[in-house]
Length: 433
Ligand SMILES: Cc1cc2nc3c(=O)[nH]c(=O)nc-3n(C[C@H](O)[C@H](O)[C@H](O)COP(=O)(O)OP(=O)(O)OC[C@H]3O[C@@H](n4cnc5c(N)ncnc54)[C@H](O)[C@@H]3O)c2cc1C
Image (cartoon, rainbow, N blue to C red; front, side, top):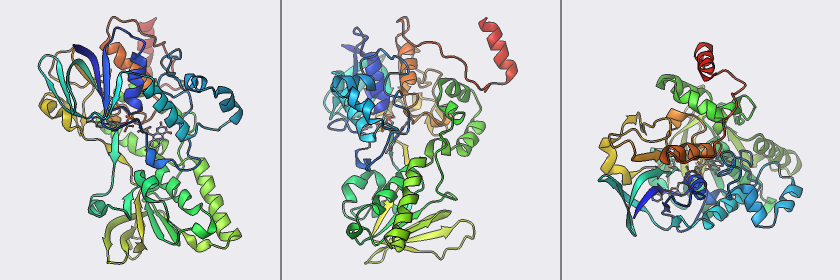
């Protein structure tokens, strides 16, 4: 039996592909995840955490609103669509979106958990080995996402009192009377800080120090024209630019994807006001933006962090803590299962080079493809790791994979912005007419 598509990893990226493929009954597909059951950032369900994108940016809707795996179908199937509307959430609770994703994975017999893909070879078809079986496929969809990132100097210290924020739920159960240092000024660091200072008076930590390399605790830029970066037309425009432009663009616009939501910032500020001016606990929090943590050590009693003030270069601000939480982001996950194919793939810096349909550029036959989902931020832009374009990206993959099958992707209207140079743009318009 030859599968048309085998997916590695079942996070939102491949779950979107599995959901959009589902109505094609003649297409044999199988998706595998090493986790025993569906999970989505399960260590990070801070009270009040919300989805940072609109609810229509689910697995399928932006490509095929009639697909049975939409968020609205989920609410309807679970009998809570009226309640959801009446609740008037300003954004979908993160845990509810996770429940939706789990529902979609439970409802799709092509997805399999508790099965790790260990190796993929090629002999005219892809030979996919998991720790339970070996199957053959015409196409592969790699959707292995990201892994927690911790600075190299801290990795040997990881344990119960020093950990990545993705383990917050399991390891930060009681911070009472402890000194806590949180390193990282993005959304995850902000949510951990807010959670740590939000408990009742008698459960409060002794001190919570929040350190960020950024000059301030800066907001996510969620404004309309910046959100154009999360549209298919911009992803295509970005893809066509040269590597140096792309690198500088990503650096300049980091807050479009990695800033802190305004709601979280306001809640933090209000809580700081309460602690200092109402509850008389002003010493609980220390906010240190514009600092870099250079080293960490344990002196037998406590953790010490060597911190440099980025403006003055002063190194005389050591921070001592009982618990250290690294909110230092995520990096692309390793893909050891691709080792047998590595020499056949082209690379662009550290990323596998992809074509316009998200297929890896390689020396194999054109009708055998390895699609790379959420593995090409440097090539495709800020939206790549985000939920915004997952449905559109899956549809691109399906159209490339099932050539000849009629797909439902409707033509999109032009952006309000003219991203391309006018001449190139008008020439294309002219040709289209
Ligand atoms: C706390 C948090 C909140 C977020 N909130 C938002 C948001 O509100 N809006 C937004 O747009 N984005 C958000 N993001 C970013 C985005 O949702 C995530 O990056 C998303 O999970 C990406 O999906 P993915 O499928 O590409 O990867 P992942 O979700 O990381 O899934 C990859 C899967 O691959 C599996 N895997 C890896 N290797 C193998 C193997 N060899 N065999 C089998 N399985 C394997 C892993 O077990 C994992 O389940 C958030 C990220 C975090 C950390």
